[in-house]
Amino acid sequence: MPLKIACQMDPIDRIDIRGDSTFALLLEAQRRGHELFYYTPPDLALDGPRLIARGSSLRVEDRVGDHYKLSNHREEDLSEWDVVLLRQDPPFDMAYITTTHLLERIHPRTLVVNDPASVRNAPEKVWVLEFQDLMPPTMVTRSLEDVKRFRQRYEDIIIKPLYGNGGASVFRIAPGDTNLNSLVELFQTVFREPFMIQQYRPEVRGGDKRIILIDGEVVGAINRVPAPDDTRSNMHVGGKAQPTELTPRDLEICERLKPELKRRGLIFTGIDVIGPYLTEINVTSPTGIRQIEAFGGPNIAAIFWDAVEERVARH
Image (spheres, rainbow, N blue to C red):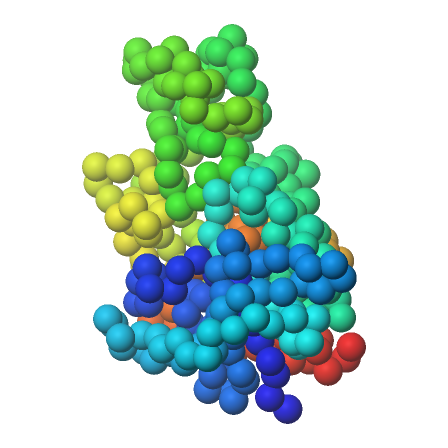
């Protein structure tokens, strides 16, 4: 049966459809005959008991520069829809958190994917701390003295914001670099939250592996190799996608995460692995599915909608 699917996402005119996972999900939903309603986070409102969104009917086409058409702008009660696809990008700030509280009012009668409470309680660089035995040495702090002690132990370190995304504001402080004090002062000024310090792993020069899981099951992976003049492997900042194979260690990490992903209702997740280490669990708007398919991998959008349709039917 066709589903009524509302998509809460960033402005659709700004996305690069060649690598955008949300767009791939929308294409597949449309191919299956599902109805699409598009709105952005500022257009969500709670009116008494009704959770409403102001948006438009959406048609998508896999054509760069002409990839969407909007029509019939209106207000919809989201409790009357089958699915809300929660696909806005971080920053994971109070605006983002507020939308999860609002969407909880209709979930699971209307299936919100991923579960809004679990998205709120599992920020990428925070929830992963529950699996520190799988991670490289890590510290979360605002203290310069803490960072200095960490650097004395591990010498080569990474500093990054706790709620960032896409590789933004990720810095490597190599041995001999004299910018540590100034960089920590900058982070203390710009960010109210603590920030994350990790041991730099040289394996990243060979790539940072993105592994996609649907309902806890591994469905595909790509390797993201940083540009020669950059530490970061994120494709937003110039990382190059390459095909990859999963190692026994990769599969061990995925098996450890699987029961918790299923328990939390996190249907679509993407984890990041550098060498033998888990570094992030992405639950807000994981990317990589178009690149995986481009290298001969499965149609992950189809696997995703199979899982969602089965869950809607079950409820």
